[in-house]
Length: 263
Image: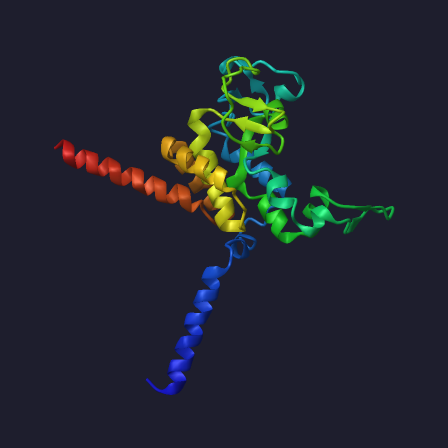
């Protein structure tokens, strides 16, 4: 190999090194879906057409999004109107991935009347990466509107006691501590969504939350619907959640090993 070939090889290695350091948002922003948040929600409606079940409460809902409260024992805490229909909830709230961005903090947008404004609306109009995050289907789930509103932009965590503010629904919110506690059977899904947003968009997760999510990830392994959902989003959006991919592969291996040992 001559000197020119050596130099060229070194440049290729440097290039691959730089690509490895790039957040996957550089690629996710250019996925095939080209979604806006509004478009993403419409696609999620179709994606869930054969599994119309709310994420936090496990309630069934109809074609037009009306919640069948009796299917899960849901009773509104306060907002009956919002509790009648589903909304598409960001598992990682928009505030968590958007509030540090310039468009959220500074009045860089103007209305048709010349009034300056900032925040989520501004980011949705001016920030390509924010739009990719806001419309990312891996981060969207159907939730009862009241639960979506009560959760707000609160962090997930454990709440002492088991107060039941929504009938039989296993979902608690501590408004003073700004914390929401979901049911056992969706905790792993939440952890893997946060991991995905961290890997793809550089989302910052506190050490306390990392420890919590690591526990939830182990306690609530990936299930069949999570795998199907991931595959469907991959077909539409062009990328999968690698944490669901790896776990589903692990489950398959464990199943094969158990089958082998049983013979």
